[in-house]
Amino acid sequence: MKRQHESKKIGSILKEMIEGNPLEKGIDSVRIRAVWEQQMGTSILAYTEEIMLKNNTLFVTLSSAVLREELSYGKEKIINLLNESLDKEVVKKIVFR
Image (tube, rainbow, N blue to C red):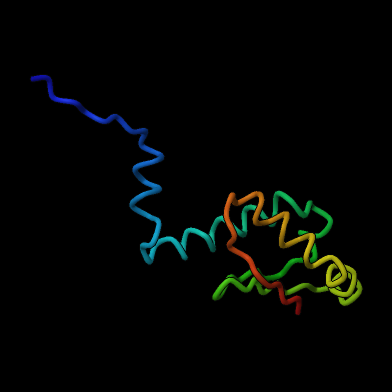
């Protein structure tokens, strides 16, 4: 009898190890910062002071009250953009401060 081996890519093995593991939340926090920088662009990034993910809520501290007000009108669009970039639902709510 031949022994059958299932071959998997390292990425899928790592994904299986991380999912459901406490590390996943930490990795999501790091990834959300990178996605924010990539998707929001340099002009918004220049006013971004802090980004923190806690319990599926993204807290973004901005140095411009005008920008904070502008971004608050597009919260749902931003949430969808970030989650789409992450390939999973990480952000359910955004709080601009």
